[in-house]
Amino acid sequence: MSLRKPRTEWKLAELAEEAGVSPRTVRYYVQRGLLSAPNFRGPDTVYGEEHFIRLKAIRVLQARFLPLDAIQAELQRLSLDELRKLAESDPTPAPPLTPPPPSPVAGSHSVAPPAPGRRPTEMNRYQRWELMPGLELHVSDTADAKVRALAERVRALIEEFQDKEKP
Image 1: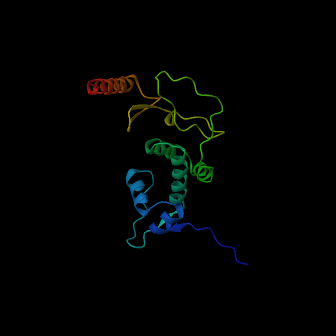
Image 2: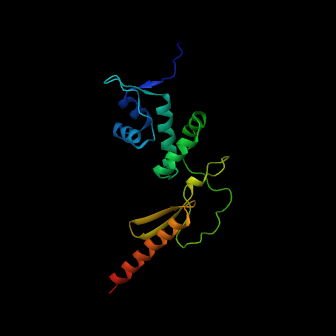
């Protein structure tokens, strides 16, 4: 009986397959800053364990419906050990322990409740407004007054547009 050493290095295609994404997605995440660039060694370039853990964590956060900007903030905030725990966790979002407070804007709600046992971060709560079928606006709860005013103006413009389209 031989004990297999856990894998710590992958070629791009191997890493992508193991993490359940495409090689193109891995390259995009590197370009976007969600993953660090691997040490380039031409055709022998390899990705390490941290790349794999981050990919798995990204998949969990995506399953919780977080947008990539919020995922990037979470990845920067968490230590490697916290990322490892996240990567191994259940990807389905947990129901909130307490009901969320009523939203000040009709049609808005928060996305991605925090995982059990974790304090919520300001980066993962958003209001979602459906402006019209197929068009949504997401505004962070931490957005300043200027951003909120801009969001309200966009909503007003959409309403004006819809009113003009009615016969």
